[in-house]
Image 1 (cartoon, rainbow, N blue to C red):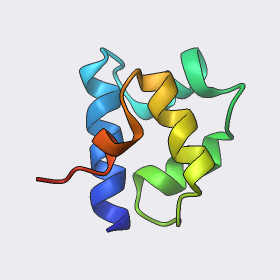
Image 2 (image 1 turned 90 degrees about the vertical axis):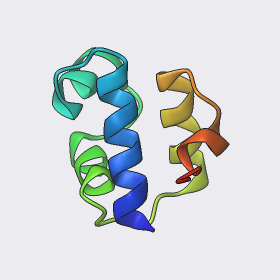
Image 3 (image 1 turned 135 degrees about the vertical axis):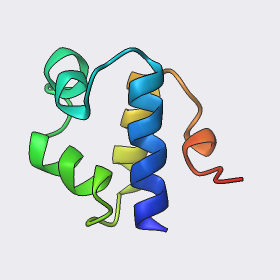
Image 4 (image 1 turned 30 degrees about the vertical axis):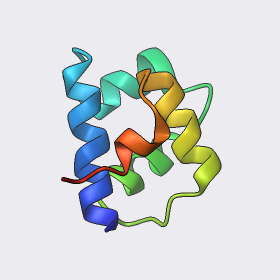
Length: 71
């Protein structure tokens, strides 16, 4: 589940025109979460808190449930 979620978030970041999650973090997410947290999420190495997931969804302008839809 964690790896799927990480890939989904990375895909949404790239869909928004960011070259990498790092670029997204610099331009958009740095005030909301640490770079390490984003890296752990993208690499599937972290259980994501719902509040963090909601923050990412808001920054990516998608619904939280869209990040969890793996079909």
